[in-house]
Length: 311
Image (cartoon, rainbow, N blue to C red; front, side, top):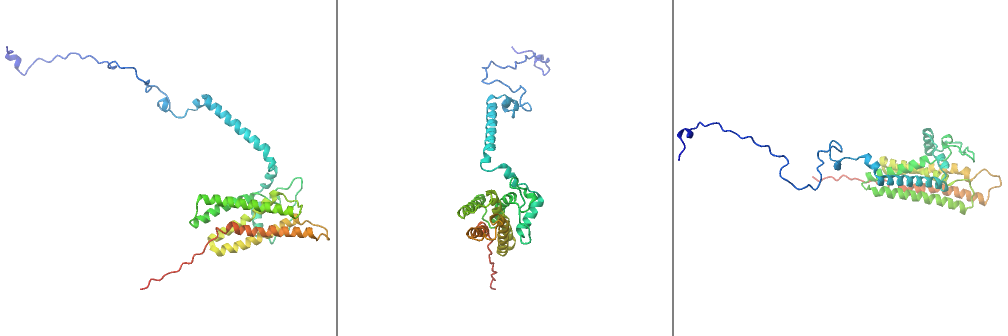
């Protein structure tokens, strides 16, 4: 049966909406999660999760393994320091080593000028007390370790600069240069001490004094290399000749008072000749080592000829 026509018109009673029931946010029943949700918990840095928090010093302080490792490392370092402090005097006296570095700016400037121009210097005697030597900053003729040590390091750096200008620089070359210079210095000092023993010369010269005196040649080596960079081979050989002469003269005048002390008039004999030969050996050894340590760094002059293009 068809509905009445009034019910078929477009006008119809308003639709009555039934109130909707709010769905539960919990959703359907799920199984328990594998991990706890900690996203709403405050922790770490800026509300980050504790697992992704930054470094927390409190956790490290409360960690027993970290505390044990820290205490073990501290005790090990203290034991090593005590061992070095107790046994370093067996090889080198720290008090004597500090004496060789007791310098100031004025002493360094005057000493460098003396090494480069020693001919005008008059008084070569060293004023010191055998029980307590005077510091080098108070006596220009006293040996020091500051200039040789700084000159040795500067020589390595200048050698790297020279090799860089010659397109053959590499980090391994710096190590080879430093090792070679150290070995040559060690052989030099050992050879001088052995010569003292062979010649039966009981001179009052210490091993550290010899290291200091033999280390002054690195000042001349540095000047040779710098002159080679600026004036090529001409400057290198000119400065090498001058610094070899001045270094040998400096050592002769300085060591003469130690190896050849003032003696009686009838002291000219075999013993004095041995001392003279030993002194000359030390003086001649300096230019030879200066050339050996710089021969692989000397500049090479390349002749460039202009080739004219025929028309």
